Length: 90
Image 1: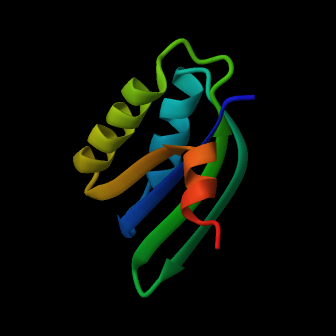
Image 2 (image 1 turned 90 degrees about the vertical axis):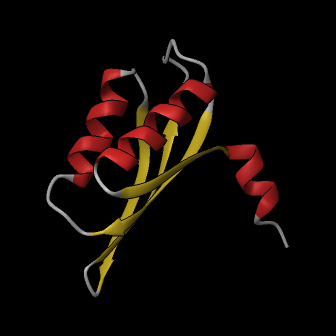
C-alpha cells in the first residue's frame, strides 16, 4: 500500500471536500480515512489515502493538490506516510 497524508487548511467555503475527493477519485487514489473540523470559520482536514492504483508519481499528485489549494484559497499539503510518521515521532 502506498499511503499518503493530505492536510487541508484555510477559510471554510462550500465544496472543499468535494473538490479534494473529486481530484483523488479522478486519479485513482482511494480515501482510507478522513477527519475534518471547522473552528471559527477555519477549515481543517486530514486525510489518509492509498495511491496504489494511481498512475501519477507522488510529486505530481502533491503539486496538483497544492495548485488545487491555491485555486480555492486553501493550503493543501501531501506527504508520504513514512515521512509524515517520522516527522511526528517523539
